[in-house]
Length: 120
Image 1 (cartoon, one colour):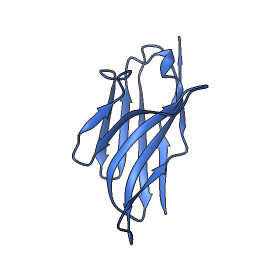
Image 2 (cartoon, rainbow, N blue to C red):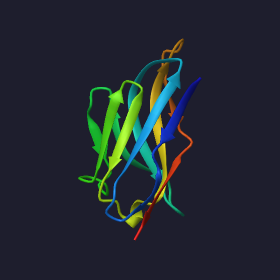
Image 3 (tube, one colour):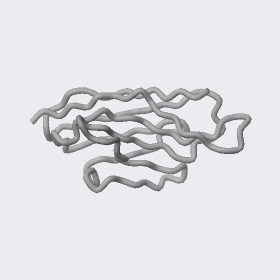
Image 4 (tube, rainbow, N blue to C red):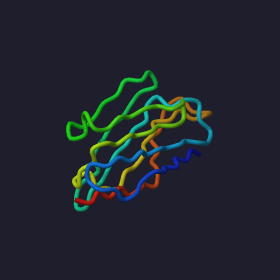
């Protein structure tokens, strides 16, 4: 089994910064991709950013230039969020595509979510 534990959410004023972190543990051979999704009030879950093991990164248009995703080591991912806006308010979920011990295909895992609230 694989667990993802997130940290770093909270309340911040518009223009402020937060850093989210996610650590994966369990029977892990490798994690080809990790990323962050978010779900705002009354909205569908959407991709914020993701990155592969080689360091390439993809961002939602709404966060380009403000958010930076990084793989701190092979089992952790962080999201530095700057110039936060009220519309960034959401529950942020860590996602990992994991190759587990004893398996030949990867599987997706999710964290429990961390609340980010940006006040105007």
